[in-house]
Structures are given as structure tokens and as C-alpha cells.
Length: 495
Ligand code: BG6
Image (tube, rainbow, N blue to C red; front, side):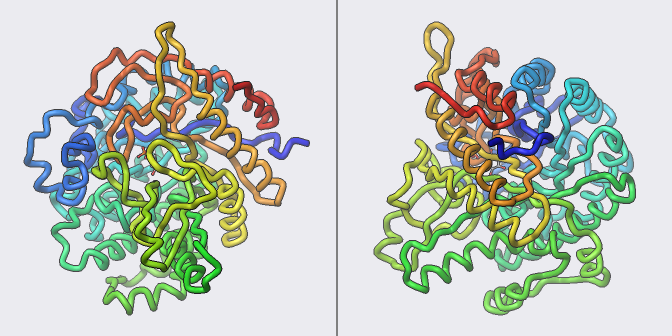
């Protein structure tokens, strides 16, 4: 029995600042990621002190070149089409579309690049899921406003949204306002353009930025629906599964509280009002949010059409200090390679190793069942269609002398997750699609490394930017093609 609906969307996802490169072409200005060095060279410090980092010369900046998608997009889309993609999730580079603060009109040169990509993807039969802001805040926003702490960012974001909605209203149906909006709590530069070292009350700053983004997101939803009532506009978080480490009730409570820090965002975006638990959270942390007239009405009016999330890994939460001493890494934990990368969520200090799970080479726990759990949890909570817009395995791949990449570990990871996704759909979850991360090797967001590869397509490029940028099909390429052509039924692989 096939669990996937006939019109299920299969594809992959990339982000402009990890893919495009061409950081100074077509009038693009710098984004936050363009000033960050590779992990091992002070990346973590730069993430927390971007204004000072911007004055330094790190020599090599991975995001400035990406994988040169700006000049390879056609070839890449052809390869995606060869795998049978019916959807491609992408983002625009905000500073390519609006290179300067206060521009009335968008940068036509920059938009022309997106025109080409979108038209060709549509020609190849793909839907587009467009993420308006995928960790790509322009550096001018950090310099002028300290990012989203300042509500003037709302107008800038709405200007960007309106430009894209109007230009692509007949080509794009699916939109996501902010990538992993919950990452604001731990990734203030990427998710909010914020130099956190300049904030007196860093937690309040994060939640003020969150409020501003939530209102801007709701206004964008309302605006988008006015422009095209058929638009499906969604929220997106870094998906969190927090298991209590033991049946000790405090562990369960801690796991619930940790999860709520992330659900806080879609709670507002999908329901249209602040969750009740926010009151206590704000009071106990001396957080006073500036809410202006009309904000709460805007939240109520602009609720999202679907809820989407990334899922890589689960966390195991403990309140026992002896157990907590045994740290784990992961998308939700502090340790990444060299301990010099970014992290997505803030509450990592309470997560520990889960003895039932294996981990990736970057220490991210591999938990396919967690995906089924999360899909059910999110669907139960919001009762809106969901989408899995990121999921994948970052690993070291080896290119053999005769030009192959035998990535059976990736095939295993993907097949186990897709199987669980199918089971969640059988559980009753309405899931519209799956865009794995990232179908082609791109630079890693947390560390800037090229060696952390997720793709079905290998890119000949190393951590220092050397290589031809040639694209090579890995073993997993043929496997994903088989998965898509069988609508998720044929997950077989031979190892
Ligand atoms: C998500 C981001 O947090 O995780 C992506 O939305 C990112 O941009 C992905 O690339 C995987 O993380 P990393 O650090 O391995 O690239």
C-alpha cells in the first residue's frame, strides 16, 4: 500500500547564501553570511560580533562563492528534473534584490537572475516554494537598525515580499516568510541580522525581534492573499523533538518547556495570538516587548496556510547535572565541528546523548522515528497541512578515482526517514510535500564547510574554495529518482 497521496510534492531545498555565490555581481551588497569566515577561523565569535567582524579581513569567505549556483543554475535544475523533482524550495538573496536601505525600486539586475531560475524550473514542471528570508539579512540592516530589533525592518521586509509576490504571482504558489524563525533565539545574526554583543538585554532583544518578525510575517500573509488568493503561505521552524531523558517528571517538564520555545513561533503564526505560556516566560525573564497599536490585530488576521519545518535530529533532555555533563552535538546543540560554528536553537545546555541513537560525523543524532513523532505532534497541534522542507544527512563524501561517490549511508538515512514520513501520513497527517536538504552539495550554514555534504549531486570544491565546481551524480542520485518515480514506495537499496 502506498502511503503518499498522488499529488505529493517531491524535491529538494537550497538557500541563496549557501548556493549562489556571486556576492558582488548584479549590484548585490553584502549579507550577514558574506562576512563570516570558515569554522576554525573565528566563525562563532564573528556570529556574535558581526559589526566588529565586518571590519576584519578573514581572507576567505565561503558564502561569497557558494557553489557558484549563480552561473550553474540551469545545469543544476536539469539534474533536479532528471531525478523527477516536482518541487524546488529556494530563497532569494535579500541584498541582491534590495542592495541598499531605502531603495524605492528593487534591483532589476538581481531580479533577472530569479526570473530565469523560476521560469526554467516551472518549464521543467516544478512548483517553487519560495522562502522570502532564508538567513540572508542584508548587512545594511545590521548597520542601520541592528536588525530585527528595530520595527522599521517590517517595512523593508514587506517591500521585499510585495516585490516578489507581484512579480511571481502567476508562477509561485507556495511561500515561506522566514526560514527557521525559531532560530532567532540562538542564531540572532542569521535569523535576525542582530549583533547580539550590542544588546543590553540579549533575551529581550531576541523576543522583540521575534515580535517584529511575527507581525511582519502576518502582514505579508495578508498582503500575499490580497495579491493572489490562491497563494499558500507558511511558517517554518527548525523542527524539535525533545525526549525526556528519564521518566523523572522534571525531565518531562523540561522537555516540554524546551519544545515550547520553538512552538512559540508557529503558535502565533498559525493561531493568530500569543500562547498563554508566553506571559510567564516574559515575566520571569524581565522581558518587555513593545507592542504597538494594530500589531495584535495583524497577527490575528494573517494566519498561515500551512506549517513547515526542517528535521535532522532529535534531542534528549535532562535536568540531572551529572548526565548533562555528557554533551551531545546537533542542530540544537552547541558543539559543531571545531566548536566554532553556529547553532540553530538556544536551549542546548540541557540536551544529552541518547543511547538508543547513532550520530552523524558531526554528532547529530539520527532518529527517523522522531520525524514521524514530530509530524504527528505538529499536525495535532495546528490542524493545518504540513510540509517537511528540510531533511538530510551531512557527511564526508569520498570521490573515487573513477569518479563515483558511494554514499550508501545517505541512502540509508533518507530511506528510513521517508519510510517514517509515509507512516505519519498513514497515521492521518496531511503532508503536502518533502524537500530534502540540499539536493546538491552546498556550503554548510553552521560552519561554512564544503566538506559537510548533503547532496545527491557532488560538487568538486573543497573547504578553501579550490575545485572546478563540476557536478557529479552520487549513487544516491539514482536512488532518489527511483523513490520519486514510485511515489515513495520503492525505498529499496543494495548495500
Ligand atoms: C538548517 C538551515 O538549519 O539546517 C540550513 O535552514 C542549513 O540553511 C541546514 O544548511 C543544515 O545545517 P548545516 O549547518 O549542516 O548546513
